[in-house]
Length: 297
Image (cartoon, rainbow, N blue to C red; front, side):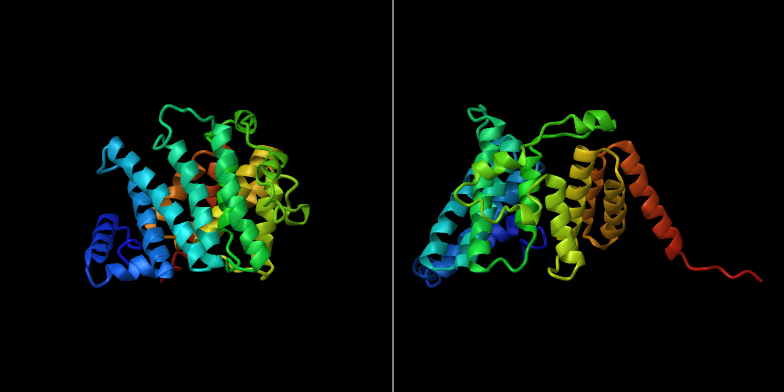
């Protein structure tokens, strides 16, 4: 509950208290399922602390990043010991995303001994393992997070560009590069699921939700719309699909938590100005439509 409410320091203190309890510590030690939950949560707490630029020094954030990756690795081992396929796919995806985010934010490999593409490939292999487990064993609960993580990593460090030409000129990983990188776990990334180009991947996942074959919560849906807008613009320019995605995202943002809204507000600013204007107009129109009608005598 503390972690969910964003109270990472308090959550970390509670985990330490649990581990230090002489009666409860053996449960963590001898129950692999409990040990997985403990380590996975501790890793998420350390990841959150590492990604928060406020309150910690860069050295402290780097230590938290290293601890997060260590805890995720130990949690994966505990998942295998517990014979929990669902836990294994979950932590594999966490490892992949955390590797990329920590490298991107200069929290691991500060000397840049690895190239950007090498880290992307390493992270995508973990995402590929997670998705392969979901596809092979029917676990994962119809989540879109692996698709979202994959698309976010594929973009690499592409920045914003208010000009359409400069935005489209940015380089991302190609579909074939990802298929090659994720072998032998590339089977779920099939052409039938849109793995022809990245905008098709995002569109396929969104269609699964819109057709009722999957149900994604508002946060997952918002992330898919952001990726659809980003890749449609990157691949096709200022097209109808990109406008539709940002307009829909702008309306959906009102249902999100304040921290989540801030993330998407900042993300929209990385898109060309025409799309930013479309998102603002969509929000303005929705606000006017929701205003109570005033009666005049």
